[in-house]
Image 1 (cartoon, rainbow, N blue to C red):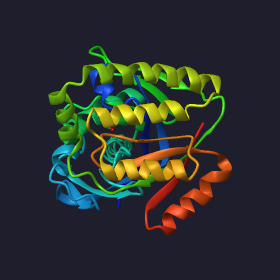
Image 2 (cartoon, rainbow, N blue to C red):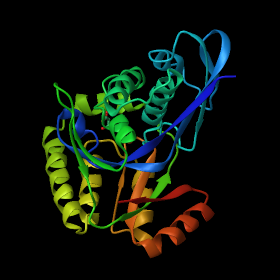
Image 3 (cartoon, rainbow, N blue to C red):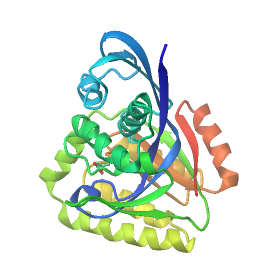
Image 4 (cartoon, rainbow, N blue to C red):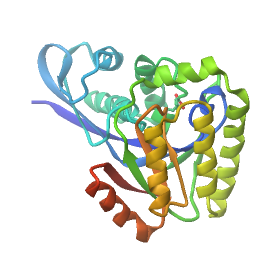
Length: 287
Ligand code: MEV
Protein backbone atom coordinates (compact mmCIF):
# COMPACT_ATOMS: atom_id res chain seq x y z
CA UNK A 1 0.00 0.00 0.00
CA UNK A 2 1.28 3.43 -0.91
CA UNK A 3 2.10 5.63 2.09
CA UNK A 4 4.01 8.88 2.68
CA UNK A 5 4.46 11.03 5.75
CA UNK A 6 5.76 14.47 6.69
CA UNK A 7 6.42 16.40 9.89
CA UNK A 8 6.21 20.11 10.73
CA UNK A 9 7.02 21.80 14.05
CA UNK A 10 4.88 24.00 16.26
CA UNK A 11 5.94 27.46 17.36
CA UNK A 12 6.09 29.92 20.20
CA UNK A 13 5.75 33.65 19.68
CA UNK A 14 8.59 35.19 21.66
CA UNK A 15 7.21 38.73 21.26
CA UNK A 16 4.65 40.59 19.19
CA UNK A 17 1.46 38.51 18.94
CA UNK A 18 -1.68 40.47 18.07
CA UNK A 19 0.36 43.52 16.99
CA UNK A 20 1.63 41.36 14.09
CA UNK A 21 -1.94 41.30 12.73
CA UNK A 22 -1.63 45.10 12.22
CA UNK A 23 1.65 45.05 10.29
CA UNK A 24 4.14 45.27 13.18
CA UNK A 25 6.96 42.72 13.30
CA UNK A 26 6.87 39.72 15.66
CA UNK A 27 9.53 37.16 16.66
CA UNK A 28 8.68 33.47 16.78
CA UNK A 29 10.64 30.26 17.14
CA UNK A 30 9.99 26.72 16.00
CA UNK A 31 9.80 24.09 18.78
CA UNK A 32 10.65 20.41 18.60
CA UNK A 33 7.04 19.36 19.31
CA UNK A 34 5.00 19.08 16.15
CA UNK A 35 2.61 17.22 13.90
CA UNK A 36 3.10 14.25 11.58
CA UNK A 37 0.70 13.70 8.70
CA UNK A 38 0.59 10.27 7.06
CA UNK A 39 -1.21 9.78 3.76
CA UNK A 40 -2.33 6.23 2.81
CA UNK A 41 -4.24 4.76 -0.09
CA UNK A 42 -7.96 4.40 0.62
CA UNK A 43 -10.81 3.43 -1.71
CA UNK A 44 -13.30 6.15 -2.73
CA UNK A 45 -13.28 9.80 -1.72
CA UNK A 46 -10.39 11.09 0.38
CA UNK A 47 -11.06 11.63 4.11
CA UNK A 48 -9.42 12.02 7.51
CA UNK A 49 -9.10 8.45 8.80
CA UNK A 50 -7.36 9.11 12.12
CA UNK A 51 -7.02 12.30 14.15
CA UNK A 52 -7.11 13.40 17.77
CA UNK A 53 -8.24 16.80 16.48
CA UNK A 54 -12.03 16.89 16.65
CA UNK A 55 -12.84 20.08 14.77
CA UNK A 56 -15.56 20.61 12.17
CA UNK A 57 -13.15 22.79 10.16
CA UNK A 58 -10.60 19.97 9.81
CA UNK A 59 -11.71 18.45 6.50
CA UNK A 60 -12.81 21.77 4.91
CA UNK A 61 -9.28 23.03 5.69
CA UNK A 62 -7.27 19.97 4.58
CA UNK A 63 -9.37 19.30 1.47
CA UNK A 64 -7.99 22.53 -0.01
CA UNK A 65 -4.75 20.60 -0.65
CA UNK A 66 -5.47 16.84 -0.35
CA UNK A 67 -6.46 15.14 -3.66
CA UNK A 68 -10.23 14.54 -3.89
CA UNK A 69 -10.02 10.74 -4.33
CA UNK A 70 -8.12 7.83 -2.88
CA UNK A 71 -6.22 9.39 0.06
CA UNK A 72 -6.69 8.63 3.77
CA UNK A 73 -5.20 11.25 6.12
CA UNK A 74 -3.77 10.17 9.50
CA UNK A 75 -2.74 12.91 11.94
CA UNK A 76 -0.55 12.48 15.03
CA UNK A 77 0.66 15.41 17.11
CA UNK A 78 2.78 16.01 20.19
CA UNK A 79 1.52 19.62 20.41
CA UNK A 80 -1.26 20.77 22.72
CA UNK A 81 -4.13 21.61 20.33
CA UNK A 82 -5.40 25.20 20.17
CA UNK A 83 -3.13 26.39 23.00
CA UNK A 84 -0.93 28.94 21.25
CA UNK A 85 1.77 26.58 20.01
CA UNK A 86 0.77 26.61 16.37
CA UNK A 87 -0.93 23.22 16.19
CA UNK A 88 -3.05 24.16 13.16
CA UNK A 89 -0.04 25.69 11.40
CA UNK A 90 2.05 22.55 12.00
CA UNK A 91 -0.84 20.46 10.69
CA UNK A 92 -1.13 22.72 7.63
CA UNK A 93 2.57 22.63 6.76
CA UNK A 94 2.89 18.89 7.42
CA UNK A 95 -0.12 18.26 5.15
CA UNK A 96 1.29 20.39 2.31
CA UNK A 97 4.62 18.55 2.62
CA UNK A 98 2.93 15.14 2.70
CA UNK A 99 0.78 15.92 -0.36
CA UNK A 100 3.89 17.02 -2.30
CA UNK A 101 5.55 13.68 -1.36
CA UNK A 102 2.38 11.87 -2.48
CA UNK A 103 3.00 13.54 -5.85
CA UNK A 104 6.65 12.39 -5.81
CA UNK A 105 8.33 15.70 -4.96
CA UNK A 106 9.33 17.92 -2.01
CA UNK A 107 7.39 21.11 -1.24
CA UNK A 108 9.40 24.34 -1.39
CA UNK A 109 9.06 27.03 1.31
CA UNK A 110 7.00 29.12 -1.14
CA UNK A 111 4.56 26.25 -1.73
CA UNK A 112 4.29 25.58 2.03
CA UNK A 113 3.72 29.30 2.68
CA UNK A 114 0.96 29.73 0.05
CA UNK A 115 -0.93 26.47 0.58
CA UNK A 116 -0.65 26.35 4.38
CA UNK A 117 -1.96 29.94 4.46
CA UNK A 118 -5.14 28.75 2.68
CA UNK A 119 -5.56 26.03 5.36
CA UNK A 120 -4.83 28.49 8.17
CA UNK A 121 -7.49 30.89 6.83
CA UNK A 122 -10.12 28.14 7.10
CA UNK A 123 -9.15 27.66 10.76
CA UNK A 124 -8.54 31.27 11.80
CA UNK A 125 -10.23 33.71 9.39
CA UNK A 126 -7.54 36.33 8.74
CA UNK A 127 -4.36 35.15 10.46
CA UNK A 128 -1.16 37.16 10.07
CA UNK A 129 0.65 34.10 8.68
CA UNK A 130 3.43 34.05 11.30
CA UNK A 131 2.51 30.61 12.68
CA UNK A 132 2.80 28.61 9.47
CA UNK A 133 5.79 30.68 8.29
CA UNK A 134 7.90 29.73 11.31
CA UNK A 135 6.63 26.14 11.09
CA UNK A 136 7.78 25.94 7.46
CA UNK A 137 11.12 27.73 7.99
CA UNK A 138 12.15 26.45 11.44
CA UNK A 139 14.59 28.35 13.68
CA UNK A 140 13.91 31.86 14.92
CA UNK A 141 12.04 34.16 12.54
CA UNK A 142 11.16 37.86 12.60
CA UNK A 143 7.97 38.24 10.57
CA UNK A 144 5.96 41.12 9.16
CA UNK A 145 2.82 40.53 7.13
CA UNK A 146 2.56 42.54 3.92
CA UNK A 147 0.15 42.98 1.03
CA UNK A 148 2.84 41.92 -1.42
CA UNK A 149 4.01 38.96 0.71
CA UNK A 150 5.73 38.59 4.07
CA UNK A 151 8.93 40.33 5.16
CA UNK A 152 11.15 37.73 6.83
CA UNK A 153 14.37 37.80 8.78
CA UNK A 154 15.89 34.55 10.03
CA UNK A 155 17.77 35.25 13.25
CA UNK A 156 20.92 33.56 14.38
CA UNK A 157 21.00 33.90 18.16
CA UNK A 158 24.40 34.71 19.63
CA UNK A 159 23.49 32.58 22.65
CA UNK A 160 20.79 29.93 23.09
CA UNK A 161 17.52 30.62 24.91
CA UNK A 162 16.25 28.12 27.48
CA UNK A 163 12.49 28.27 27.88
CA UNK A 164 9.95 26.49 30.01
CA UNK A 165 6.46 26.30 28.49
CA UNK A 166 3.40 25.67 30.67
CA UNK A 167 0.00 24.73 29.28
CA UNK A 168 -2.88 26.22 31.27
CA UNK A 169 -5.45 24.40 29.12
CA UNK A 170 -7.36 25.31 25.96
CA UNK A 171 -8.73 28.84 25.70
CA UNK A 172 -12.51 29.33 25.78
CA UNK A 173 -12.32 31.49 22.66
CA UNK A 174 -10.74 30.68 19.32
CA UNK A 175 -7.81 32.66 17.88
CA UNK A 176 -10.23 34.32 15.43
CA UNK A 177 -12.45 35.44 18.34
CA UNK A 178 -9.47 36.73 20.37
CA UNK A 179 -8.20 38.68 17.34
CA UNK A 180 -11.72 40.06 16.71
CA UNK A 181 -11.95 41.15 20.39
CA UNK A 182 -8.72 43.15 20.08
CA UNK A 183 -9.95 44.69 16.82
CA UNK A 184 -13.14 45.85 18.57
CA UNK A 185 -11.26 47.36 21.51
CA UNK A 186 -8.76 48.95 19.07
CA UNK A 187 -5.95 49.57 21.59
CA UNK A 188 -3.78 51.39 19.05
CA UNK A 189 -1.29 52.82 21.57
CA UNK A 190 -0.58 49.43 23.16
CA UNK A 191 -0.30 47.67 19.80
CA UNK A 192 2.22 50.24 18.65
CA UNK A 193 4.10 49.84 21.97
CA UNK A 194 4.25 46.07 21.35
CA UNK A 195 5.61 46.76 17.85
CA UNK A 196 8.35 49.01 19.32
CA UNK A 197 9.16 46.41 21.97
CA UNK A 198 9.68 43.73 19.32
CA UNK A 199 12.30 45.91 17.63
CA UNK A 200 14.15 46.12 20.98
CA UNK A 201 13.84 42.33 21.43
CA UNK A 202 15.43 41.78 18.00
CA UNK A 203 18.36 44.10 18.81
CA UNK A 204 18.93 42.43 22.21
CA UNK A 205 18.66 38.90 20.75
CA UNK A 206 21.25 39.74 18.09
CA UNK A 207 23.58 41.20 20.73
CA UNK A 208 23.18 38.17 23.02
CA UNK A 209 21.72 40.38 25.79
CA UNK A 210 19.00 39.79 28.36
CA UNK A 211 15.50 39.80 26.82
CA UNK A 212 13.62 38.74 30.00
CA UNK A 213 12.53 42.24 31.11
CA UNK A 214 11.29 43.00 27.58
CA UNK A 215 9.16 39.83 27.65
CA UNK A 216 7.66 40.97 30.98
CA UNK A 217 6.75 44.30 29.37
CA UNK A 218 5.20 42.42 26.45
CA UNK A 219 3.05 40.42 28.88
CA UNK A 220 1.88 43.60 30.62
CA UNK A 221 0.88 45.09 27.25
CA UNK A 222 -0.99 41.87 26.39
CA UNK A 223 -2.85 42.27 29.72
CA UNK A 224 -3.73 45.83 28.70
CA UNK A 225 -5.16 44.77 25.34
CA UNK A 226 -7.37 42.29 27.20
CA UNK A 227 -6.00 38.91 26.09
CA UNK A 228 -4.52 37.66 29.37
CA UNK A 229 -6.56 35.95 32.09
CA UNK A 230 -6.06 35.45 35.85
CA UNK A 231 -4.98 31.84 35.15
CA UNK A 232 -2.36 32.99 32.63
CA UNK A 233 -1.17 35.73 35.02
CA UNK A 234 -0.83 33.15 37.83
CA UNK A 235 1.20 30.84 35.58
CA UNK A 236 3.46 33.77 34.64
CA UNK A 237 3.89 34.61 38.35
CA UNK A 238 4.75 30.97 39.07
CA UNK A 239 7.50 31.10 36.43
CA UNK A 240 8.88 34.31 37.97
CA UNK A 241 8.92 32.59 41.39
CA UNK A 242 10.78 29.67 39.83
CA UNK A 243 13.48 32.12 38.76
CA UNK A 244 12.45 33.12 35.22
CA UNK A 245 14.13 36.33 34.05
CA UNK A 246 11.01 37.06 31.99
CA UNK A 247 7.69 35.37 31.27
CA UNK A 248 4.63 35.96 29.13
CA UNK A 249 1.63 34.38 27.54
CA UNK A 250 2.25 33.15 24.00
CA UNK A 251 -0.23 33.11 21.12
CA UNK A 252 -3.73 34.52 21.00
CA UNK A 253 -4.31 34.33 24.79
CA UNK A 254 -7.56 33.82 26.65
CA UNK A 255 -5.93 30.58 27.89
CA UNK A 256 -3.30 28.32 26.38
CA UNK A 257 0.41 28.48 27.07
CA UNK A 258 2.78 30.80 28.89
CA UNK A 259 6.55 30.52 28.86
CA UNK A 260 9.42 31.71 31.00
CA UNK A 261 13.04 32.35 30.17
CA UNK A 262 15.40 30.41 32.42
CA UNK A 263 19.00 29.28 32.52
CA UNK A 264 20.09 25.88 31.24
CA UNK A 265 20.64 24.71 34.84
CA UNK A 266 17.19 25.87 36.02
CA UNK A 267 15.27 24.51 33.03
CA UNK A 268 14.86 20.81 33.85
CA UNK A 269 14.16 21.16 37.62
CA UNK A 270 11.52 23.81 36.88
CA UNK A 271 9.81 21.53 34.32
CA UNK A 272 9.90 18.63 36.80
CA UNK A 273 8.41 20.82 39.57
CA UNK A 274 5.57 21.92 37.27
CA UNK A 275 4.90 18.31 36.19
CA UNK A 276 4.73 17.29 39.88
CA UNK A 277 2.19 20.11 40.45
CA UNK A 278 0.02 18.55 37.72
CA UNK A 279 0.79 20.98 34.87
CA UNK A 280 1.73 20.02 31.34
CA UNK A 281 5.15 21.61 30.87
CA UNK A 282 8.03 21.37 28.39
CA UNK A 283 11.62 22.48 28.14
CA UNK A 284 12.31 24.29 24.86
CA UNK A 285 15.67 25.45 23.58
CA UNK A 286 16.20 27.95 20.77
CA UNK A 287 19.39 28.79 18.92
C1 MEV B 1 -1.57 33.52 16.99
O1 MEV B 1 -0.59 32.51 17.16
C2 MEV B 1 -0.94 34.86 16.94
C3 MEV B 1 -1.89 36.07 16.73
O2 MEV B 1 -1.03 37.20 16.57
C4 MEV B 1 -2.76 35.90 15.52
C5 MEV B 1 -2.02 35.94 14.20
O3 MEV B 1 -0.88 36.37 14.15
O4 MEV B 1 -2.66 35.55 13.21
C6 MEV B 1 -2.76 36.31 17.95
